[in-house]
Image (cartoon, rainbow, N blue to C red; front, side, top):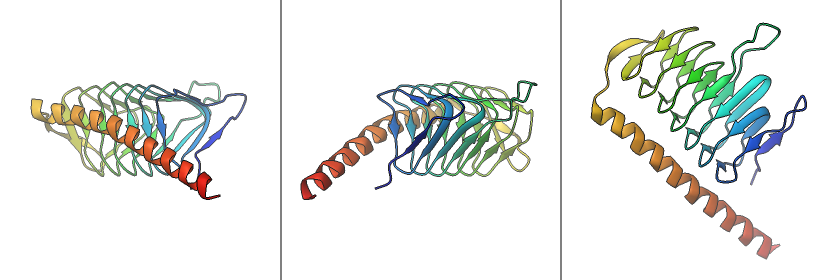
Length: 189
């Protein structure tokens, strides 16, 4: 079982809340802060080497996703700021952008430098939000490049929040299963 790589860099050590779930195989590097009950799933990379990354409470970054930043070489660049209760689907690329509380990024999507996804907005699976775009609250955007498709229904928004609660629950189950597996392995050794 591969432990997560938690790597200090440039004098910054990742800060991970004790209730967060960090799956094996992840790499969390540099100026990263991860909030309570957040979950970072198998084989994700959060690399804050040239700017910072913040992940809010109960947010989840699903398997194989990458979060990186735009450089701060004197012009400020763009950190990656992920609010509370954010869902980021499997294999997403989130780069130097801001995801407000309750934002949703679909599987395989790309969110580029300087973008903002407001709360209760959804970027569809496979979409690419090009640099500097802002998605207003309550909207669904799709395509490459992503464009407005429709307003989200109350049921859509409620479904996103059920997903957040589900991932908090799943994170606790996976943490327990990993702990059990490690204890069993140490007994056999």
